Image 1: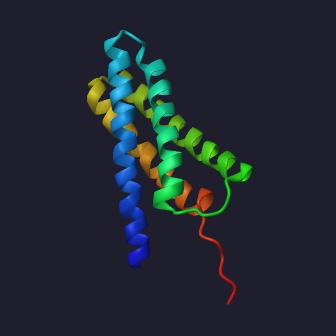
Image 2 (image 1 turned 90 degrees about the vertical axis):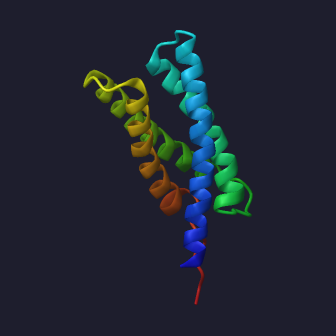
Image 3 (image 1 turned 90 degrees about the horizontal axis):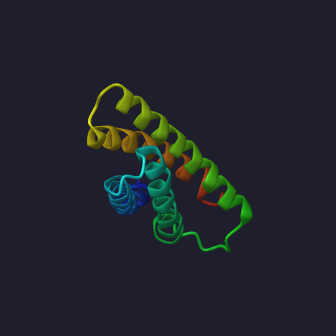
Amino acid sequence: MKKKLVTLLRFGTVGVGNTLIDFGVFFLLTALNVPYLLAQVCSYTAGILNSYIWNRTWTFRVKEKVRGQEIIRFLIINLAASGITFLLLYGLQKAGLSLVSSKVTATVGGMVINFIGNRLWVFQEPEIDS
């Protein structure tokens, strides 16, 4: 149980870093008049790169060599999370929420999908034969 809590706390810490990168790039680009949906794609991509490196090496402490299957799974989960984030951001903007409120709400939705997918599918703990 303690190990799972530590993993969740590490994931959260990496998530904070990813979010800071995501928000920083997003608001920098929108301040430069880049359309918010294009800014979302760019900022989320920057967060994905940070996420893979830190979650693989620190959160889930994967020791094995990087496998193509792992990268493909990681990209699938992040594309799904990105899609959810993108749709939420678009929908919340159309509903009239502020850009900041829309971005925060959309980010939380994407984080839930991301954690579940990474924990259960991408960075699985190896099965131990009894």
